[in-house]
Each structure stands twice: as structure tokens, then as C-alpha cells.
Image 1 (cartoon, rainbow, N blue to C red):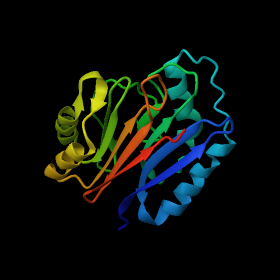
Image 2: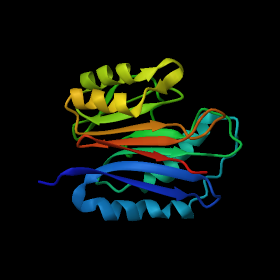
Image 3: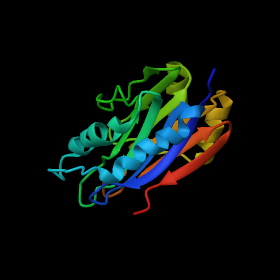
Length: 195
């Protein structure tokens, strides 16, 4: 039996938009997964309306998440589209099941993974039940859809015996700075959009 692991990547689209991502797959597929997302630099996102936050998330889903091979069980992406209003530019879930608008509802996405996302972010994915995710998410998101400290998130995950989690923030908008937190076996790491 293979073991799930988190992999991360940072790329730029053909027009130069920075994209960060984290995915979950069986450990034997990590290198192949990273190779799939190295093709982001060949993608022209082609945003038509910088005032439409839904369009950016839709394009992120359709053009970048669609690079995910079938063996990727969960994916978080954040992108910075210069000049676009926000908040936008963050998606999380099963790359073959994206398309639902963030509505604060917890969903099961298969492979014992659960996901939740708020409009304007953040979003969280854990290996665990929907009820545990709802409890954790309620304790780590504060007013105006802001996450509490990494330390507090890590404590909540550990207290609930969660081994694997992703948190994503939108990368586009006046107050947004794209970020993904990965949590794997009591270790949290932060990936940020660099430009």
C-alpha cells in the first residue's frame, strides 16, 4: 500500500503570473506530479476581465488544475494576477472535482480527504472527517476571512490527530498575498507567492 505525501511547486504562467501549489499523492508519484506542473510555464491564462474574480478562479481551475494527473488526490493553487481586483486566485480540493464556488460548506472529496473554503478564502483540506475539519476551521479562521497564526493552526491539527493538511489563501487582490501552508506529520511549512 502506498503512502500519501505532500509535494509543492512554484512556477509562472506564460504571461508571467506567479503560481504556487501543493498537492497530495502517493509518494511513488511525487516526481511525476511535479513534472506535470512544470508545464504551467507553457500556459497563457488569458484573463479577459480583471474586474471579475470568478473568471480568474475558473481559469486557474480549467487551465492549471487540469494539469493534475489522476493520481493526485488533493490540490491547492494560488496565483497573483497583477492589476486584477480581488480577492481571487485561490482554489483547493480534488482537481477532478473543482468547479464548486467556495461557500463555507464542508465536502468529502474521496481518499479520506475533506475540504472547506470561504468566498475570498481561506480554504482548508485535511485527511480526516468533515466534522473534524469544520471544528478545526472554525477555530483557525477569524473575522474578514483571515487565518490565525501558523502555530495555532499547527496546534489545532495536532490536537485533532491530523497528519496531513493544506491551507490556501488567494493570491490576487489589494490585500491578498498568495500563501499555502502544508502540514505533514506535525511539521508545517509555508509557501508564498514571491512576486
